Image (cartoon, rainbow, N blue to C red; front, top):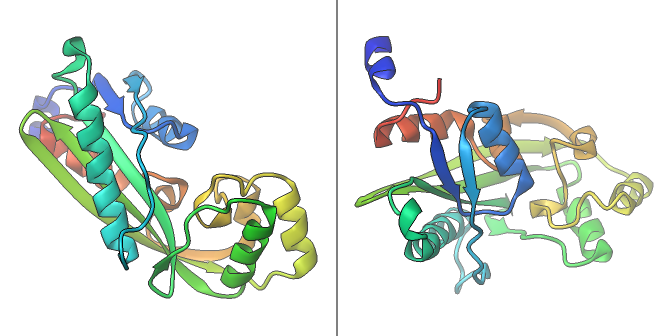
Length: 205
């Protein structure tokens, strides 16, 4: 297995179809010498009909990848493209991102003392090869009181975060435990992504 791994070329270039600084940091943590091209896919991320969380993240990851692949500059047309979408799902319903502080408070109240899922859909594309995956992590919040929810929202950290919290930041104090991939909750499951890179023909070590 190690001989196969070392026979693969090192991943040197990647187009990331996301403006998320968290995903960029995770990729650079995985492969510090990786040359990243940041090319966000600007599209409507609203649910269609009654999509569940898994259907939503899978569709959006594919849609983002398709958009960026179609818009790639000629000199980068051979680079792998990675797109991802992360959603917090409670009782089967994607919660989305809070639109304002009041919405963030309501999201956190709904998560308090309960278990929810964090799902990330990924699409990795190069040429005619399209690889997809959905990774799920169970997250359990401890019981939160109104005062600490309000204080956390006042930090501004919940802004533009799925579910209204950031586990890699101060939001870690809200979490009692997780089951599954930690980096998935941050926004990009590196364990699964490394396997996908190998499927595509690259190593990261």
